[in-house]
Image (cartoon, rainbow, N blue to C red; front, side, top):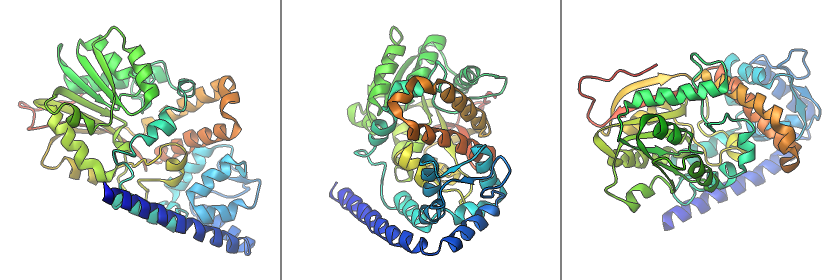
Length: 411
């Protein structure tokens, strides 16, 4: 514990030093406005994005202080600049698509070196997803208010990528996703299921109601616990407010026939992968199945912990590289199946944005205009990122010793 506290003090100290350096750097950048402007325009232009151009994905600059802000803070400066009204764009998703798809190196170039340094240190040395810090994302994100999340999600309150094969609406895509999960789990009546990161209880409800199984859901969000318990009332579902590491501390002998983790690994962090997978292994019966659904990255040009996203949406978030998942499950699980339908997140994000924009008048007085622009940027920028295929959505099926007779995954 002392070592953890010392590490965090060191991490905060490094961030403080960088903050001071950035203030000094910003001052010098403002002394050479034309040079800075040309520098930013050159690197964005490599991906086909122009400033004050005529295409729908071009950036329209309202405040020229945006240029030094981008150089000074990289993608954090770009996102904050939009939130503060320094630029507009007719189609942010198309802009993001060009940035990622046109020339990946351009993204790296405006991913500020200090951000890259902090990204590396936080992912490799400092544990920003320790047990004491794991509750931060619940408090700062998932407990923002159910009215916010209800404004853009479907009635099942699934906050992960839908499965759009044979679907034309968000509700159908999320239902299909839950059915796909169920089919890959090979459920039988009477089984005991663990849903790690159960959210608002949509999957817990679906499995218990339609497949006659009992479900334990865990989450680090107090608002989600209240909503999930209400949703799953009168069903064999138990919702617990615990960190996944408490599963072994609270009941060391508890085991489950099936374990599901959907959209939670992104909150676990590289430093805790072994702990996470060991916990799953110990909680899973010998012939059980572990189903893992996660956003993932397969190229090192894309940061695993992007500064704007971790500052404003998912604190301490970490999107795993495929190699890190393999390293985490090594000597613990047999890899039965690995499916990628990352392009479906494009449609999911587009649907969320459509709903959010439609319902915004109902909640705008509570959250404000800057908050609106923040979420618009989140939905649209990441729509373009997933459309470029630089981000993926993986569904992975694992067993302890290999499923006798083989495993055939549903699609």
